[in-house]
Image (cartoon, rainbow, N blue to C red; front, side, top):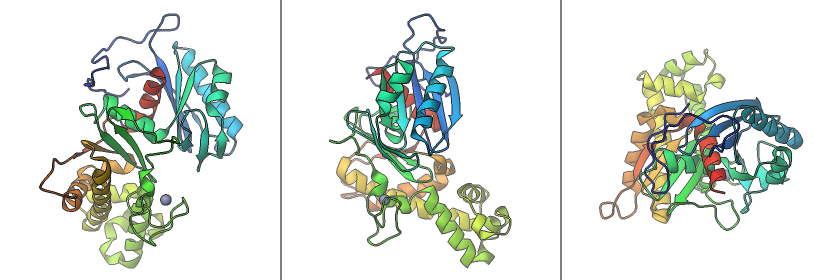
Length: 340
Ligand SMILES: [Zn+2]
């Protein structure tokens, strides 16, 4: 269960810690399902953002009908113990403006998938579909690191770089539902090739994949300065992974610290670009790489402060760590289903 702080936005019931109600009553409970490339994680969530029951399945990533069946299985597991009034599904992909169809999911074989209709047909519960980073952003806004402001951006630094925008208290989807894809801002003309087909996307410089690429290149080219990383990778530079960099940096290894500083610099400079357009009060940093905490966030804050337009003459946003961890997607999807 996630330790959720009291909510501060006016329209939320704050601080209620009532025990979950079991099947049979009117509950105010909704289900959030986070569909990722490897696992489908579902949770029953109450009005204060607490997860009161959980279930999961592996993702049958190559078969759209099997993914829907697995989502229905997760929901069935949860409903065997809890009554729920609606389902929110967070999916790693482009979701249409009606929050019904997944237009494209790079890792899930979904193309124009009518997910809302299919989940509703199998479960009989009203369903909303949302981009997974949007769902996580909503959770951090409502119950987590952004609960005291009205304008917030979430950046999730996992394998890639995801984003979700909450502007003026509302999740911002754009005209076609596919806004907030901040990872594909171009930051380097003719830079590294991105999975989206373009070159130089921010994601290619500020993500777990970027950290691994840079770390391996460093270990390969400067093995004598990379002993701490090389040792963690069993002596093979091709086996260096992101968490090894974080561990080595936390243990004080200079090379690893510098690799995270580099990533933090890309992050901070990109945040300055977002601030120029959107002027949020808070940027929340989540995702696996954010476990590096201040080793990442301090260089990000420094780079942001150097790059911010009109610096010294304007209020300055805060860069904060996420509070809800991996469960943000479940909590946000469930809360969006409640507000459908
Ligand atoms: Zn891209």
